Structure formats: C-alpha cells, structure tokens
Amino acid sequence: MKQMQKGFTLIELMIVVAIIGILAAVAIPAYQDYVVKAKLSKVATAVDPLKMAVAMFIQENGTAAALTTDNWTSLGLSAAPTATTEVASYSVTAATGAIVANLCTNCIKGGIDATSVTWLPTPGASAITWGVTSTSTDPVLLSTISKWK
Image (tube, rainbow, N blue to C red; front, side):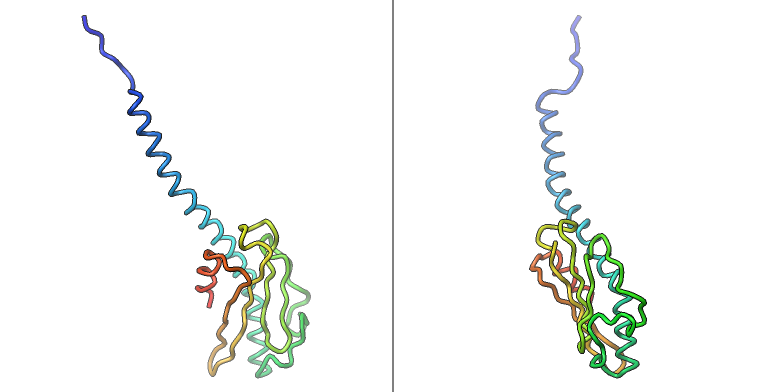
C-alpha cells in the first residue's frame, strides 16, 4: 500500500519565513517611529502648564517684557517644573516668554537626544499663538512639532 507523506516541504517553509521577514522589515521601523512620537507627546504635555502660565502672564501684563528669566513665582509656580524622563530641564526666556525644553540624553532617539525644543509666544488680538522650533533636524521630530503650533 502506498504511504502518504505528511508535513510541509522545504519550499513552503521558506515562503513562510520570507513573508514573516518582509512583514517585520515594514513593521519594526513604523513601530519605532510611533514610540518616538509617543515620547515627544510627553514633552508637549509636560510643557503645557508652562505655556498656560506664560500666556496668563502676558494677558495680565500686556506683554512678556516684565518677565524675568526662570522667575517661576512670577508665573504662579512655586518652583521650576520637575524634569521628566524625556525632558532634562526647562527654562523661560526673559522678555520674550519663550519656553525651552532641553531633552535628555539617550532617552528618545539618536538625532533627537540632547537637543532642545522652543515654544515662542506671539500675542494676538484675541489669543496667543505658539511657534515651535527645535535644534534638531530629525524628520520625525520636525513632523511632530509642526502639529504643536
């Protein structure tokens, strides 16, 4: 009597491995970009209370000219904001009200680590708009901060 072979051939197994390799080659870089964007969203969230404090100072005083560098009490804060996993330190520039977040080293991504992101307020007739710039030229960071304006 004739015996039937059972199992997969080598070609079938090689096709499956190739398909998994192609999917991994596409998925892993996309996943890494999402992780970087998530960490950058933490930076923006950490700066939001400072943006509100600077905006209130400008609205109450008509300008940021009376603002002094890192005078946290003039902004209604008891002390400098606590550093986060992604942000090593914050500073507020005198006269302009610019908020600078200095990113930490080795915590986000190679081209983004140890750079800074600056939020510059522009008072308008009815609202304050924020311009956002960075010292990094990383495309993921630049595309992310373009949405923060």
